[in-house]
Amino acid sequence: MQIEINQGLIVLAEGDITEEETDAIVNAANSRLRGGAGVDGAIHRAGGPSIMAECRRIGGCLTGQAVITTGGELKAKHVIHTVGPVYRGGTRGEADLLRSAYLSSLKLATAGGLKSIAFPAISTGVYGYPLAEAARIALATAIDYLRDHTDLEVVRFVLFDRRTYDAFAGELKKFI
Image (cartoon, rainbow, N blue to C red; front, top):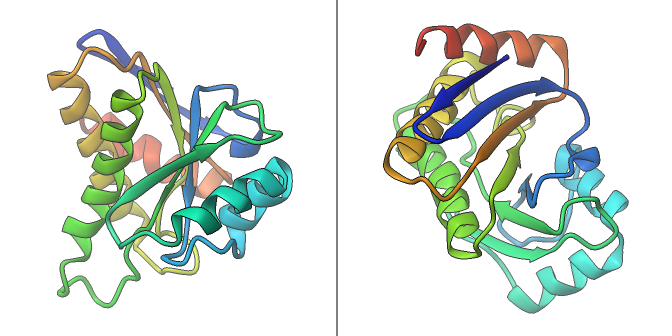
């Protein structure tokens, strides 16, 4: 599923983000940038040790912010590491922090002259963010960004399973 916004595309795909050929893929990282489970572990395993070496030099990343490293052995040239919030009921600024994680990643891609970026569903795994709400925030942030910026051509959401894809597709239909 895809929609055109301004001069860019938002695309939903079910699959493995480590196989993406976009200029950058986004890693749902932890604040220490030390690798972990889920998409974070998969990216580090597939990309090899050069990604972790750069993460160690950077040292860390605050929740809602993003940093960029090489893509190592991945097809993508870069990995943008962002830290989404742990969901604690939605009353501790989680929505703003999740929006900031997506927005910081998009801004970093633009600053680096990148044309395409692929996101996972940030914070929806072990961080416990409710899927429909996370999808709505992710898509609204990307749509608003593409409305105001013409430098990014493709924003992909690469979703690990059918349940996640269906949640994102249901939310995207509300924007059409």
